[in-house]
Amino acid sequence: MRRFYFLVMFLVHAGILPAQYYIRGEITDEKKNALQNVKIILHSTGITYSSGLGGAFGILSSNTRDSLIFSLEGYEPFSLTVDASKYQIITLKMMPFTASLQRHPLLSMTLDKQDKGSRTRAAGDETYNALMENDFVTTVKYPQTSLVLNIDKASYSNIRRFINSNSEVPRDAVRIEEMLNYFSVNPSPPQGDSIFRVSSMSTNCPWNTNSQLLYLQMDAKKLNLDLIPPSNLVFLIDVSGSMDLPNRLPLLKTSFRKLVEHLRPVDTVSIVVYGSVVGVMLPPTSGSDSKKILTAIDELEPGGFTPGEAGIRQAYRLAQSTYMKNGNNRVILATDGDFNVGQKGEKDLEELITKQKLTGVYLTCLGVGMGNYKDSKIEILAKKGNGNFAYLDNEQEAEKVLVKELTQTLYAVADDVYMTVNFNPELVESYRLIGFDNKRGSLADTNNIIEGGEVGSGHSSLAIFEIIPTDKNRAEVTKGISAGTIASVDMHYRLPENKEVRKLAFRCPLHFQEFKDIPLQLRFVTSVALFGSMLHYSPHVKNITWEQELELIKANMDVNDPLHKEFLDIVTKAQKVYGPLKKKKKKEEEDQ
Image (cartoon, rainbow, N blue to C red; front, side, top):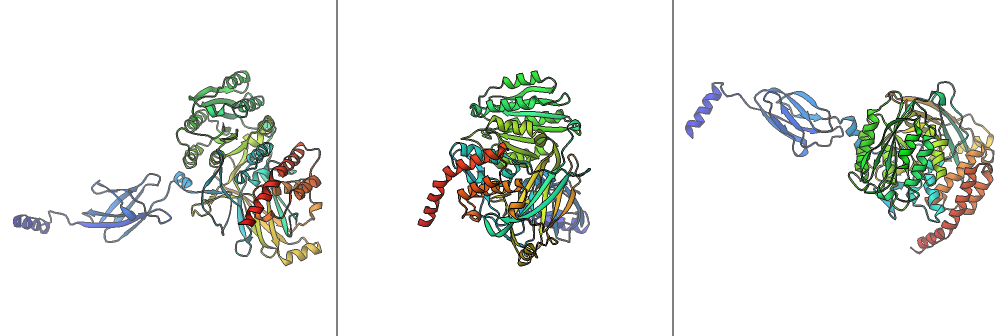
């Protein structure tokens, strides 16, 4: 043993054995979270090490300076020359895809965001993302808020389905911004080459005499039908056993037939199905061969489980293989959302569709069915898949979505669209955004972001704020003065297939008019927003009766508009469903 010790000492002093240095440090992500199991390669030896608990590492090297290469799945590789005498703090940057998975997109956001827990609510066998209603925000503290714009309209037709079935609507099925999207509000197209036009108006609030309403309207450019780019459409149709009901696969077959009738020779259609089998039912076919496409649709039969994941992957592969540069590349997914094979949870589907989004292919989701309808899953696919979302409860709705509003549904004029509103604290004491409610759980996450939506050709979006005016505001309104600016608006968006973020600025003057004097369509959609608030049992409208809501509708509807007349009919039916229920709920609250 002594001989061995003396031999080692001799070799060290003779310089035959190299000196040993200890390279130490820790590895975190950009938010300072420790990263474990990061692969570390020491350049001088090629030996691989890994970071341990807390992201710490310690490596022996024969050099005072050496190179390290760091790598971890989902993060950008990083190399660094280090000095062994210094403790190393290494930060790895997430790849864009990984970062997008970590984020929880919000429909609206202010800096005072709060949360009360996360869950998905079930109504029978149907599932909906639990929502948290926006409350009043103090302008002096938090003057800025942002909201996502899109063309989604699914909530309104789903609500109609419940009311027509004499059933109470699940609270989280009520998305007021989608209800407003359902009705056109006198769109005024932008001039020249502009993509958007923004306008505003303020008035008194019908349900709160102390409040005002501020309307912000966004009108999108309408594409020239003769210049619309060719479409590469992949119909992804759920033909599983759960679709074997008249309001599911048969309704979808009718819906797609209506769409096929309006295809052009330059358009291409493919059909992918998933059920007992997953496969291509119809290879890419020209829109001029409508007979072949219709025959393939007619031959669809339900059966088997619901391997939605496999179907989505197949559809996107096909869309990519026939990708049209500068064209309209889109998967149209039609399902009840009841996935039961493969990735089927909301988070799994979110990861899956986020990957597919990177291909540049858009997504339109058509929901159908009742009883086991999975709204929460279809909504996630549409929101994360760079797309839009509609619910088809009957043939008339299918014609509205796929024929009358074809260009809105299938042709995007802008992506990642959101609006930032800065309120003037001199005129606005506090404000609340009606609708655009966020999922519970997403607000508390530090990774949350505003992730804009897709806006289609000719679409008009409306945002309504209830505001508490300042004394100065009231005084100027009383005097008829409209020189002040109540808020400023920035529209953020990208053009399709373009990464450059554009911005449109707009100032909202204190343009106040009495409610009876504002345009009829604005008065009507105010009754739509109030209806949604009542269905959601909002505390902000708790003193409003169904009789008052019906009176508001009748006084402000267009009697020649079939959608207005249908809305009146729906609210009349809702009064019968909710009248007794509301009284019962009030009594239960009083007894507690």
